[in-house]
Image 1 (cartoon, rainbow, N blue to C red):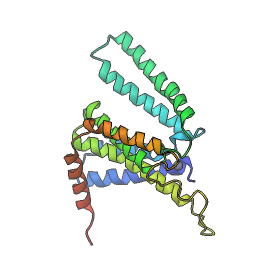
Image 2 (cartoon, rainbow, N blue to C red):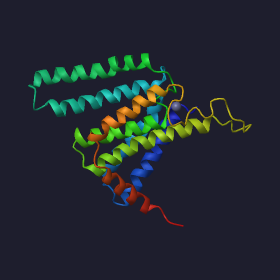
Image 3 (cartoon, rainbow, N blue to C red):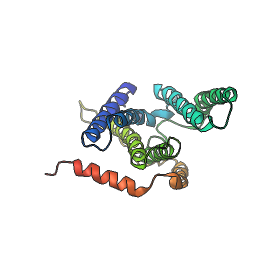
Image 4 (cartoon, rainbow, N blue to C red):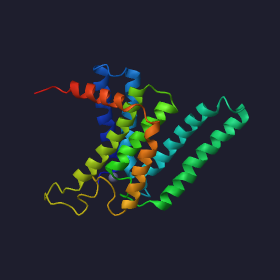
Length: 225
Ligand SMILES: [Zn+2]
């Protein structure tokens, strides 16, 4: 199994490459590019969110708490006076960082439902929906950000799978096939729940046509043989 630093580094490298390529192809500006690299790196540690002792879980919930505070402040600033606003933001931080983190730890097992392609896609869709509505990003940018997160998570799954191949003896370790999976086969109920979440998310997503356009422009960049 690849460790935290490997996951973070490889995903950040992959994200930087994609961000750079898209910038060169004027899919986005330089300033729009670097958050994509950061999101890919974040996606690269996301699947290990459910390993209890990991750096990933602490970092992820800290980042989520910061994001919650930013989104909360943006949304509440016109609705609350400065005093209560600061209180609300403080509450949001503590709530997400500690409470949600503790609840999450209690109910998940490592390499469970979050360590799957389905979760990677769902998190990407959630990111796209949030940046489209909460952060008022244009649709192509919202999709790009969602895809960046998913890309990072898929890189993570592939890395774990690579590391389960014993490179010296070229034997397969027992963990082979547990990292890169569509969903957690041991808990199909969770997968159904994730599918339902995905369906519930659909009305909040940026238009699908924008995604196909973006993918089409990305594919067109690929040098044809
Ligand atoms: Zn992992």
